[in-house]
Image (cartoon, rainbow, N blue to C red):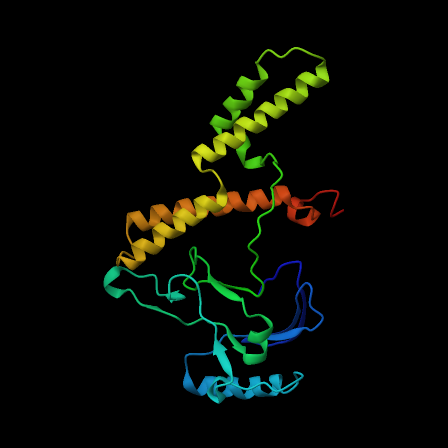
Length: 261
């Protein structure tokens, strides 16, 4: 269970198969309850799990009922309709929709634009689901920042090398500022031409996997190659967010640095 910093989340209870939490979204004064459950495939175990869940939900403010009372709504999902697969070869391939978000009518009225996104499973047999209670449509202008992962890219290194050898007249500070500016412009152009935007690259690779799965191709070299590329892209994305983060523990990782001493 993960959430954005703009949400205030308090874990109320947790057990072997559930997490109960209170969620307060930005701009709201009324928290809502969320119950994450991983139910057993065994009928007898599920009966015991529902009995335990009953004692949990009774402690929530307001009435909470189960699916059979027809008071909860499956708000659907954007993406391929399955959330689990056994990741076997085509002849033995099985996929199901095991994961979903169920909401009450009152909650749906408070968040009418809420969407559930199916994310890439990326090596797992379950696909994570992302609940966005208030999807945003506006786009803000991004500030350019050099990314550490570019240091190992030969083309970026060549761009910097060429710009640094250009002849520019003026004071030392003016020359430095102009070279940095030209590097920035050329790297941005390089990003656009090579589609090096991580989000675009990850989306394209995930789309290729989706198309192959829909075509009935679930294994083999082509799937492995795309998954390897996707894993590398996700690692690059992790490096990107480390560069952007202002949180010291995320930048330092578990290294034995002065930050931890």
